[in-house]
Image (cartoon, rainbow, N blue to C red; front, top):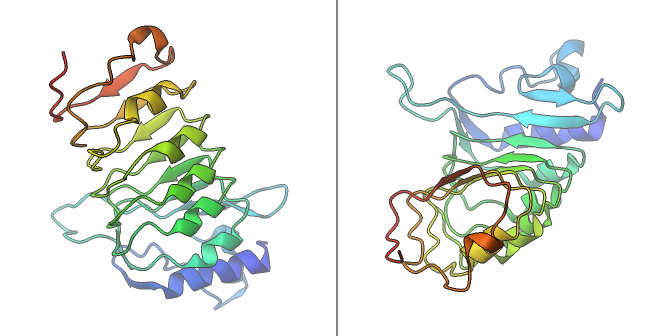
Length: 223
C-alpha cells in the first residue's frame, strides 16, 4: 500500500489536469480498495521496501493520425513536493502551459528528469541546480536561460538534451560542460549558441567520457 500523504499529493496533481486524452490518469482514484493503493496506478512505481513513490512516468505520445493533441493538458501542482523519494519523473510530450515550476528543484532524490516537449515556456529555473543526484536531464523545448551556472552543480550527469533551448546568452556553456566529469551524451541542437567558442578551452581540458555530441543547426563561426 502506498503512503497516504503521497497518495493525496498525486490526487491533487490530478485535480490540476483539465484534459487527459490518453487516459493516463484513468486509474487514479478512490472508488475501491484497489484504487486506494496508488502503487497500482498507471505510471506510478513504489519502493518494495518502503512503499514510497519513486517513479512518476506520465509521458505522452508522439502525434499520430489518431492523436493530434497532447495527452495531458493543465497545470503541474506543487503537491509533487511531497514525493520526497521520487527518483524518476517524466512529464514529456504533454501540454503544461506554464513555466517549469521552480519547486521541481526540491525533488532532490531525482536521478532522471524528462520535461521535454511538454509545453513549458519561459526561463529554466536555476533551482534545478539543487538536483545533485541527477544522471539524466532532458529539457528539449522552447525555453531560454540567461546562464548555465546552475548546471555546474549537477556533477553526476551522464545525459543532457537541451535542444531547442535558447542559449545565446550562455557564454559559459562550454566551460560548464567540460567540468561535468561523467557526461557521455550532449544534445545542443537549435540552441543559438554563441558564435565563438572561448579560445582558452581545448580538447586537452575537456571531459574524457563524452561519447556523443550534437551541435547541429547553430551558427558557430569559430573554426
